[in-house]
Image 1: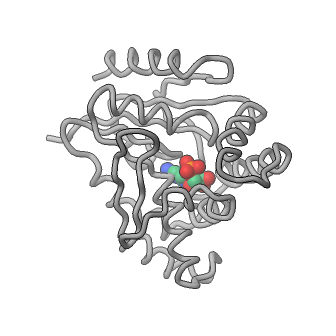
Image 2: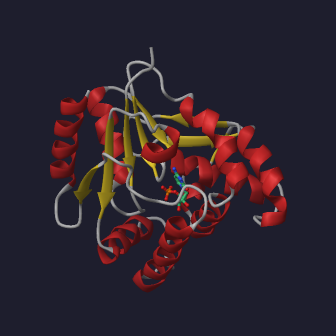
Length: 225
Ligand code: C5P
């Protein structure tokens, strides 16, 4: 029998990662950060000198299918990510990799290449999966689906605060512009465009604390599972 899944989708900066992490800890379930997989494809391609262009679609798809990635939950802070044994946790968050991830994510062979890997995270006692198409494509039969939204201004502000801790040359203006571009590409691409799945429970996180979001999500999950 398949383990239960909670899907958490939405654009960047809505607090998906934070919520998914907290929810997984609270339920003591596995956690899948699917965005990290797209980031990992971009990172590996750049390492191997593979252009993030349409003519390389098939090679990028193959790269996705054979990705050697490992997640290691840390006692505190974000889950650590390793590619071919090298720790890349912080590098995956950089501007160029965010951009690259969104480029490769628009390629069907890359999305297909990551499908099996993503589904393999579904193990007992359960999985919390965060991304853009968890409820629509990867786990369409998930018993509990959540979709987070927030205004573009608030999302840019959060991303800015996050990045400012590690990078010195960030400006709110640049982050806002990059976020808009990425949203635009994620929402309008032909394959798996970002949208709320049918039956998804929508939470607008613009003006509520993460604790309030968590409480609402937990209540929803307990009602559905
Ligand atoms: O969530 P995160 O910002 O880490 O995702 C990076 C990029 O990966 C997104 O901008 C999006 O283009 C892509 N992505 C996706 N489908 C997912 C998760 C991420 O297309 N399920």
